Length: 273
View (spheres, rainbow, N blue to C red):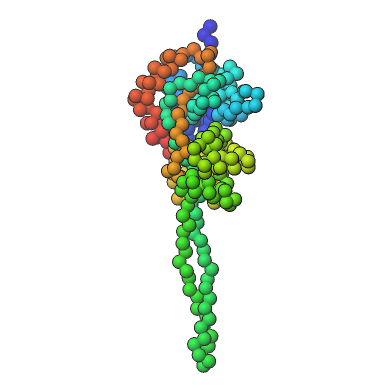
């Protein structure tokens, strides 16, 4: 009897949604979901979809194990994992990665600075002793404060104590190991304050979120009050993770090469709302 391939996913808004029909049939939606379904059908294998237990991608633990999808692959609980999973050096020590099917620039999102309201200026003019006292007011035109646009400006704002920056743990090495002093300082402050949190964390006028630009674009494209920086911390390669039990390494590579040549993933991405 053919063994089922167990596949771990992490449902994410816009990217991957899992639906089951009354008959039990699995339907994957979103650009990553549709792409995964095409790949699994092309592999022509029996498979079972499971959701990441802790809804994490995969961070190292003190005992050598990993959290999230990477940990499930590492421990042999699943054979394959996929959902915007970045290839990193430390993850590559415990799992295998396919060829990348997408690259993601890591930037940050913040709230655009509001208008600074000035106080009304009151001028009392005494026209003359024979006239009544007249109260005049003059409205000073409001000025906009420039938003935080670069990682240098973000680091300075955080160091000043008036701003927070949130980031998932797998972005921290790119800050801490950077040649740029302001990035190292930013990373140390994030760790010291434990500002490591899932990407769903809300942003405010006093906090920013470091995340993939394409994800930020999907979520905030129509928000005039949100600023997505063009400055990139790094570029990550997104791929499938698998262990030595996975049956079809060579076939997966061939399928991905063919699909990427056709531009299928980018076409799915363009159809997102």
